[in-house]
Length: 224
Length: 193
Length: 196
Image: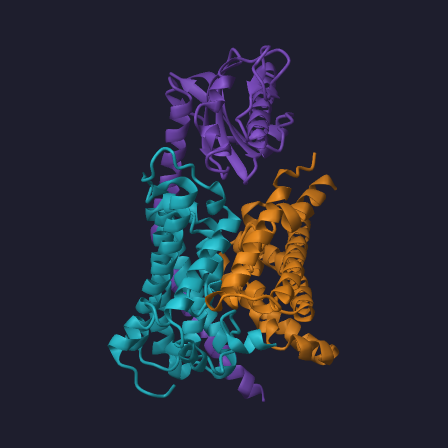
């Protein structure tokens, strides 16, 4: 992947073609856990995007001095730094959302998306492109979990963004906002996206050669 | 004693880490294709998780609390976990090379396993003692193992089924996971009096 | 070989230090805001549950209560004195009881005549549509004088004093909440009778 990437491509890559949640299959844990309400999904998405952009920019800026041996710990440290900042800002200014998202905020640290983008993009590109990549991936992630959250909230509670939307005779399927519902909606959504982008899978594969992360979307891991 | 049984049952069944709390999904979906690899990964997770629960507790108690550095918890914990995994890798390489070979790339994966950091953070939230934290870490690992083993069995069966093209791979795995998750909901009322 | 290991470790340490410094700065600015926010929220909740009180004491946590010779259950997080014009008129117990989906946090206001004035559910993780109904009036059943023989969760209609009608489809939640109230009553009674 040595070709110079155009800025616009860096940005829009993460929207659909390489959507981190639905195509690269990264960041599953929070995607399933907090998508019980659409507004939670937005909150989480924004927090993750902030960390993603921040860590991408910083890691890209210092990419020339990061020794290869300790690169994963360096990534993790930088990411943890941004996550902690988000934690503190949320606790101070958005306490309600903070309570809703609970331990999933600090867990952004181990969100595969962020580490994967650091490894795959930030160390190979300049800060501006990395920032765009972070933004694009963040938007893709937020979009995906927003859809999942909306579906689950609608079917499981009859509301959307906290407002009652369905008619009275619709008895919500509470299971949608519990664990099984999360798996189900995610599975169906990925199948849908697969159907809509047949043949495009090859691109994602080539991108991830040499990655040490082994996240679920990787053929390398799945092959064993 | 009762309390410990409660912690064990809780993490393994009632609030199974993977199927109820959604912690450890990435490796769960990525590694559960074959029973052999599932067991290997699970064993490593149980070991690292128990150790990390204990060590992070100690770090919090003797390093963070006395100096009022609790806001560094996330940073400190993840570094401890990364170091532990590195350490386990080195030890395994020296002492049990065949095991090290078979676990291969799964070991570094444990660092980004939500379940490990998740257990450490939950220990803090629930204000467990050192012993309770270690038990919880161990139990969480067992819960992870249980979910992985059950699921790899399910997935091996799925291999021989006729599945629509778009559902092949991850989607059908997730649908299957949702069904397994429903069965675990049955444990919800279990209370240790 | 040593140099090989030394340089990476040094750089890593430097990066750690820079980040820690940055975090310390952010912490310094946000901590006071967070603490103040917590304090405000607590005061609001206490005033809401104990109407008529003008101010509240600092909470007596489990340690403090034990040091006074009392025996609070594990569910008791703390007890506040409710005061009006300088005099203690009652107590508010901060209770954390384990429900179906996690901890249910509640405040129970009990006056000196051992009557429950009010209860507020502060937070819970119960199932929406079922256990979540604990916030919708279920706790009103406890208001009033404390029954002689304690509380008893029943699934059918109430027959005697102390019967608490369970939420349909949420017996575990109902029992957890009831146990929380019982423990609150026990500790406040011990405080009042012990003249503490």
